[in-house]
Length: 145
Image 1 (spheres, rainbow, N blue to C red):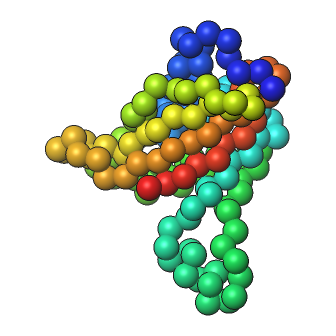
Image 2: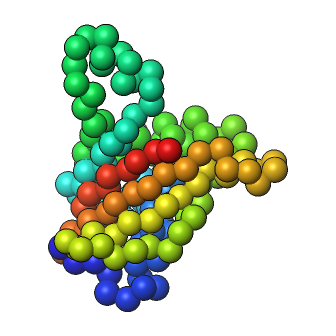
C-alpha cells in the first residue's frame, strides 16, 4: 500500500474524496470517483443507522457492516448520498480535521455535514483509509456519528 508521501498530496486525495460527495454533475462525480478510488476499492459503513441495526436485530442477525465495492457501487452510494443530503441545498460535506497517518499504512480524518443556512454541524464522521500502490483509496472504513 502506498500512502501519498507528502502531506499536500495526502490532503489533495482527501479533498477530492470530499468533493465527490458534494458534486452535482453525475458524470463529473463518476470521474472524481475513478480518480480517487482504486478499481477494486471497498467502502465500509461500519455503523449504519439505528433503523438498519433494529431491522437486523428483528431477524436475529448480528449487525453487519454495510459494504460497497468497485466504481459502480461507489457511483451508486455517493450519488444517493448526494441526492439525500446535498442536492436539496441544505448540507455540504467538509473535512473537519487534518489527516493523521496511522500505524499499518492507514490514514484517518474527520468530516462534518454542515448546514448551509446557519453553519451548524448536522452530522459528522470518522474515516480510516488505506491506499493501493497507485495512491488511490483501496479501503474506507467510515464511522458516522
